[in-house]
Image (cartoon, rainbow, N blue to C red; front, side):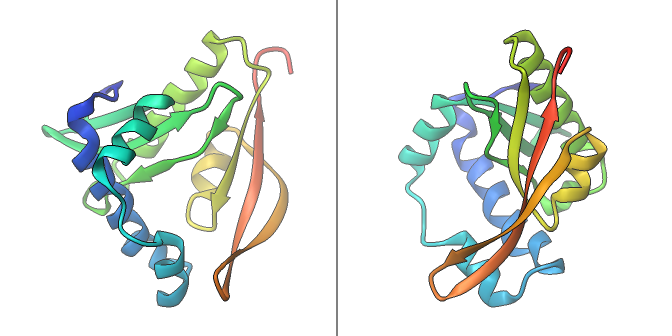
Length: 155
């Protein structure tokens, strides 16, 4: 079930974020890269405020938060994460469908994202195209990712 984020989702979505990076991302990134991507511990109140400040949607399966995504006012999809326990059950596709529908309702011309190596195929299945590959620095390490775009409406 896709629904809007509520304050009570803070701990569950933070756990999804951390577990997805620590477990799922290991398929394409080294242990050091995963740790650099994750960064330091996050304060729950700040995490909650960030989720409330953007259009965050949650996918709930079997009474648990399976994943979440968000959409900024500028059409930027900053986060798309699915808990490893719910992998390959359609959560990412449902979340992106909801984000695309929201973007269309808002009259946005396009959606953009920076997708990880893991997330690229998910975004491609949702109609996003790679604009270019990027390498970003996280401390002394580098991580590869893709700047992607999906046109909406008549675009």
